[in-house]
Length: 546
Image 1: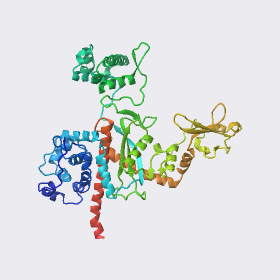
Image 2: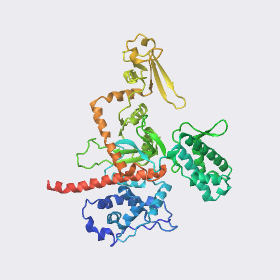
Image 3: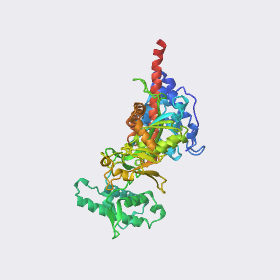
Image 4: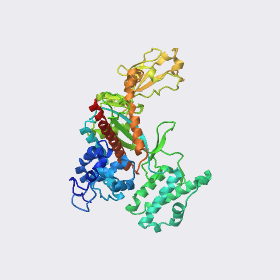
């Protein structure tokens, strides 16, 4: 499709003219959207136009209008069909987007095609960046500065499936694909498999363990036979998405026994397919106790922090805005997520924060050393030491370690007699091991220090353990506790993000989920900007009276 001719000239039939009386209040949210946010979207029209053919094909709908509609539907939590209806009937939407009163709107499928065009052109975050640029121009967001960071989980837009269900559903998808391309008649077992996987529905709650085992073995044998048949077919069929997915699922769920028959793997590995309708959805948990577990994705969210670090008085809207939304795989660590987020910030001109407030998931000896090397502050609590073999024994924190001097003093006051440098040649990771040799044998605190047969205690710490040690000591001070309070507001931002629709992805696939999260972040920023402008308008009469 070709890009339409840009039309910025006002019309006598626009809602801004015919319905101006309805939006007289300067604090009206649709008026604020039109005055503050719509110009930000028009500022990126040239980038949007680059996604279309210049002069070939049927003219598309105005890309700025499509971008504005998409942003509004995330702000008001409406699906495509409702967004289409609002654009046609809602005076507020018409006024905010500056369209004529009689504008008939667009087909709802155009919004999906517009999102696909954004993804294909690498412009998934264009709406988020447009708003962020507007906030920078208004002086509400500045590069680097102080920021806070946290992550939350995003549920996939698919149903939860058992392991056997995943295998059977994957086989069904392959069979349906073979039927669509017209080669199903070449399968000798087509009739049996079609009845088994396409036509039949299994009452899972009625199957006993023996029945489930039989179904699993049957699905494994059928999947293997289907894979062997596909490998003999032309590349277009052999390398189709459905065929490759079947091979992946089979290898994740089965292994070949000595008799070359598939046997179900006892456990699942990390990152396996949880639902064939979205193979990128992964199972993950936040802790070893599995108190929070989900199937989907993870999103890292960073926002600004006030220069003085003080919270706003009650009733006054926040002036802090989201600066980055980075979507990752569910099993990606927060450390990896932070690395990706900061890389995105650097590429987009926001820059890495000079002061970053985080929780314990982001604080390690390596991240503290990296922050010090670049002249930045990483402010967050460190996890308790896990070196001790039991809760009653002295943890590594009880030892005064000086990496530079290669010494360590134990709780009894003895200085270590030996220090060994341990380097992993594959990863480059460096540890130091401290030993006290014969001093442990006559120490009065030996039983509180070690339960080893040798009666000797060894302490192994990282290359930058002294930074971690200092952080744990800082955590005991009132000043550091006050600093940590500046991180707390990110919890409210994540709550706003998830309540607005960010908890469950609207779409399937990591790329589409990332696009949705960028629009969700833009919606949060738009709400905050509108509320801030409304509050300033409300304060004008009060300030004038004073």
